[in-house]
Image 1 (cartoon, one colour):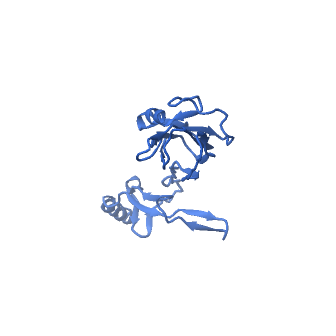
Image 2 (tube, rainbow, N blue to C red):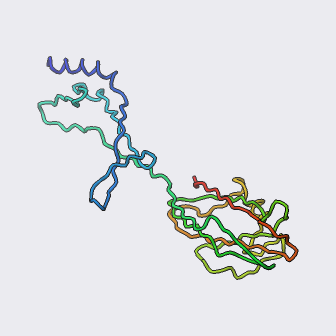
Image 3 (cartoon, rainbow, N blue to C red):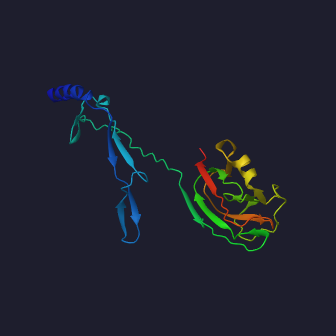
Length: 234
């Protein structure tokens, strides 16, 4: 009886000191080459926290001894006591894999005409929805040489060359979209587009640059650019 009273008093003294204790725990990933588990040291990719929230108040004869654990006085008559439930909760981040083929183009044409360049490609794999918007540098332009009518066209999972010729200057034809139209309709977060609504998906987006060199176009160097912004679908 004295032992029970002593343990109960000690439990009350320790109860106020026992709170939420959190500890950073390592996460391991399987490395097939050496055939062993390797700790993930980059906390951006993986982290875990373990906490001890077992209150001694549930059992008056239970006392936590720091560094050792819990001492419990069990009754002489066999009785089942439930220990605290152990829970695991996993939060999986949205990940995205992107591969972009061709970032810089150097083009040269000698005579007037309508031209397009073989497509650039953006390969995307992700486990969630993705929003995107686009900003461009407008038409191909030079410092003192004016500008060249310029369009962008795209296909999804289809690398064949576009079948439609370039439309009239400033127009679109269902495949080719001029730079001013892209900036006005898809050029800010307010008019973003949904690349895919959600879940796991994988697609390759192919894009073509089309431009029209008029016979009156001054010689010189002309440039433009395309910026793509992406965001997860919450």
